[in-house]
Length: 380
Image (cartoon, rainbow, N blue to C red; front, side, top):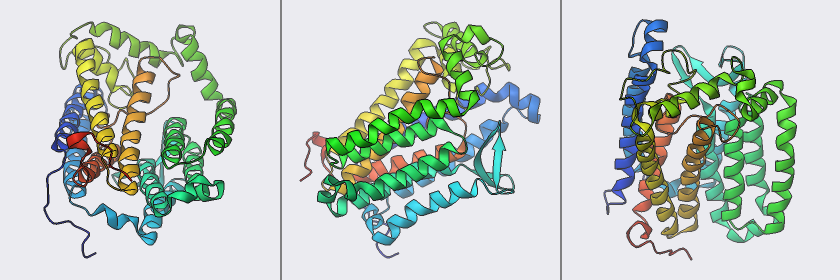
């Protein structure tokens, strides 16, 4: 464990920590706003979800600061990298063990002990990033061969398989996109890239056909008003919320859709409540902050002084960017509805804590490179 925590050195891109903390704080505020009525009816406490989110925010802040001090190069070790990968895979497997896995709305995505629950897929995304970065950085030349990319491909495929079995197609898509882009950034040849991408794209309609509820969601996306009281209901209510906000919104805490009209208003569809209460201007400000965080992540990756740091920074930024984009597209009706939280904002402690910790790691990486200062790529 010696050397795992770094001594204080030069300061990195502090804006990453500030914007992350700000977005997390915005999340606590709107989780309360979106859930106060339903929490009061269900639990007799309007602050039920907000208090849980606040606890997650405090723990997440501590985790972010700790990751900002951690010696990330120690995670490149051959044993440690496998532990980082296999522990989340083991947890994903435990989801299916009766008495350990927790089900909600027909999906088994959590493991729990008493009141404490954990969503392993959130850990698996970042475990995969660290493993892939460490593996590729050991020998960049092997990523140019199909045999060389197999460990990354198989580990990502196994994670996708376990997540889709929960079932959770949205996070599966997130991990699948992450895996493909990570392999591309690691130097995989175009022909190997196409060998992976073409079957993956052909598999998507098969996965949709396999589950009847996915076909219903697809039809609801194409014409939500045809099933306005069933599969199309949630998307319609989301559009009502976004449309009702206008330019400047109805005012914070003054949403109408949160009165049990919009399901999952504090989690997957919290963006609709934000749009209703703060209007288009508020949504643009929120996504300006998210875009700033993504931009800083890209700058950190571009300025990395070693291949492991480059891939790790890129992977962390990709996870946040892909999930943010998917949530925005779902809530606005641009793609078929699927359950995926808005990072740092939606209710859910596992996602909040792990995302904040990852941003601490991104800040940590910014201390090693010069990209956040000059925007100059110095990877060799």
